[in-house]
Amino acid sequence: MKGIGSAAGALGFVIMLAAFSFCSQLRAEELKSFSKVITSPEEEFAIEVAGARDPENVEITVENLGDTPVVDPRITVNGKFDWYDINTMVAEITRDCTTDEEKAMAIWEWVHWKRYQRSPEDHSALHPVRAMNGYGYGICGHTAAWLKALCLAAGIQARVQEIWGHTVNEAYFNGGWHFLDGNVKVFYTARDNRTLASLAELEKDGWLIQRTIHAHDPWVRVNPPNGTGEYERYITTWKDNYIEDGYDSEIAKNYTMAYTLKPGERLIRWWDPVLGKYEGRDKRPEIPERYANGQLIWEPDLQKLDVKDYLNIIENVTTHQQDHQEPAIHVAELQDDSYTRPSRFTVPVKSAYPVIGGKFECKLVKQAGASASISYGTPDFDRGGLYTYRWGSGTQEVNLYLDQFILNHEPVYDYEIGFTLNGNARAKNPAQAGVDWFRTTSDLQVSPHGLPALSLGKNVIRYRDSSKGAKSVRVTWKWRERNDDHAPGPVNEAVSAAEFTSLTPTLQWKAAKDADPGDKVEDYQVIVSLRPDCRWPISMSLYRNLGSDKSEWTMPESFLNPGTAYYWRVRARDSHGEIGQWGKIFSFRTTDRAK
Image (tube, rainbow, N blue to C red; front, side, top):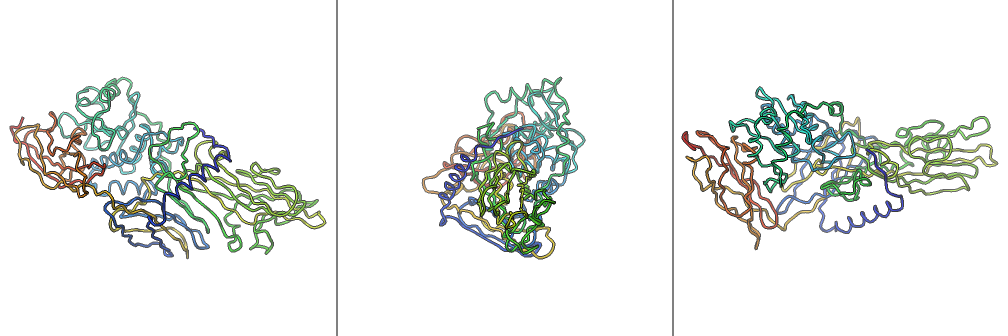
């Protein structure tokens, strides 16, 4: 998995063009902003969002204003988005679950609604913490690895099954294995119309697959062309199905979203691809269906902060705060006849998100006879791989684009900018060399799914970190309130009977209303469940959109049993594509002799 960055000049133009385009779109008068300076280890506060529907989240920034590190800042909104590690992920996903079946189904549902189809050029994206925070997409092997990892963390046995052409899962609950496909967003209901079938059952009974829709779209609940036949062939050619454990080494790793903001450092995350950068863009020009960007920027005030503790000093380097000499970072003991080794140090950068490019800026200072070089990675003893300031004297401001180095392999999560300094004590006027200031800008890829998004109404924010002692950190949200299109109202009144003698009943409801002039309801979506909370359907074939504004639906045959209680609910979509909330949960019962 390798990638190559674009040329520095072209990349600079792309960055400036993207930034200009983004800024021109985000007119200041349209944006709402909220900032909070936090000095305690944990704080809770609220943000009110007005409008007709959920806002357009734009940006969140966390910045260290103090002179001590801020360790692991974490933010939740209304109890969501604490995806720090696999355990906090599972805790959020299974919060209302009590049984292994409920936990496994909640994990399956969470995985398939939190992803898009694309394979990241990052092997660690097989782990859900890396994938769901950094990318938000993966192919069938990724979703199977995530689902297994999350189930295991929830205390549920799970395994990955290769079915030759596709990769799926089985989870163990209620005394047996049950087939779950987080990529195709499907499970198959057994012939009892109550339980989830196992792979072994499906291998012998293709009818269970044939009767099930394989809808990839969250709204348009229909089979893709030839979809059912394709998945039936995958599964029923049972001799080439096998259990796969090749993902285990990656999902067993303890990846976290741990990071530390150094003094003067800030993390910016956008909900959109503001930079227009994504991993693997040189090899696979197709743009991910959904992704976002961020930046980690470190710009310390070297006149106030002794940066020595935040550098990796290899040898013979000191700071202004240590000896009161200039520049801010410089040679400790000038080289002479008895000491000729260059002074070396690195500026380390560590990110919880994948780094997909960046820029390094600084001011080099040297006197005649001295030299200063910059390199990507650990510096050598001679010339820098990025820039060398050897001739003359004075200052030199340097702008260096890093994409071609960072993307020379898989996306990185840490890197270093190295410096090689040579002073000269033998000169008539002893010559010093060093750095007056620097700024690192690391371009990030982030998943918009995992960002702490605001919603309509009251948002309860919880901030916490692991910093020791005093600190000062500012958190800022930017969003745009939306007052244009209202979503259709909920469906809260059923018209059809509460009992049926048919196993293919027609469900009817009072039509939803749309508050917008000239707008109308164009489609409905229905879900039928055995659960009173209607959390997931009996079968994916009973989670359907109608494709019309007709407020009734006749259920397909083969999914209901006599003498059984069922639960259902409806939501509407209008002519502008706005989707309403699920309405009231209704119920009906089939008679003992229903057929």
